[in-house]
Image (cartoon, rainbow, N blue to C red):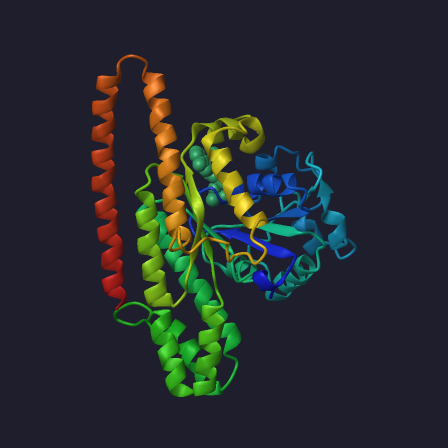
Length: 380
Ligand SMILES: Nc1ncnc2c1ncn2[C@@H]1O[C@H](COP(=O)(O)OP(=O)(O)O)[C@@H](O)[C@H]1O
Ligand SMILES: [Mg+2]
């Protein structure tokens, strides 16, 4: 396991639970941006069974990838590294050429993990699949501060929550290998269907502590060392940060994990246009809002020597969420101004429409908040 903040070489898994939230498009474009700061970057397509990172990079998938490595012993992992049109960026394809690896064996997973950990680069970005399978979770847990991409919609928020809950549980299972009573308890938790759903990580930690104090201490440390970083993608208003803050509070309460927020990326048509043109959006429309926002995230990574701890001035911002909120509000002003300009002289009509849209969004946000609150109460 690599603890990001103590290593020069940073492993960054990009996960999120839900499909279609933008994990791959963010991983590909973030890889290009990190490499643009002359940082040696390796981008890996670890969405086995659904590899498509090459299309977001705009390159043809002709080279051997993870699939070939796992099915042919004569292939060395280093042979998978292919050059890209970007000087400091190398790419490891997934399993497009040799498929059927969605259900990798643990030994295969461990083999990939140990090779990735030995890669020589400043940043190692891994695009992961959707869902909460071990293929995703074990790669995610290679770092303590993996990225979780979510949209502000409730299904994605809930998936991000359950993804982190599953990841935390997996971390506990791997940490608590003794005494036997704790191991048995953790096995039973999975097997037994509780009337109110599975207990929270907080409850599980409490129980482990009551069985064995040393195991309880180790378990607590294993969980609190996790510092996942949230990226809110396809946002449509600054209020979406509030949703993310609700998620943060829920995760802190139930999972005893403190998550950070790397930033907000608004829904931006230029991302879709670039995808259609099979070109990365940071190249296709490098001055689009989404490109500027993703570059801001790249800069936070590059300029934080103890990443994920960002050098935020505590006198100015209380947390990474507050900074993301301010950024999202500023960006929204830009969107408003652009909308006004696009509307030309007919500002009064567009303004009314605009107010109506905002009101509808606010109502939706209130409803979503209610759902998250309900979820919290059920977990208690
Ligand atoms: N900020 C954004 N604005 C507009 N469209 C986006 C944005 N982010 C992602 N998309 C679109 O969402 C789709 C799914 O993205 P993808 O990266 O494949 O999701 P995932 O890897 O999470 O399944 C893509 O077609 C992409 O164009
Ligand atoms: Mg994907």
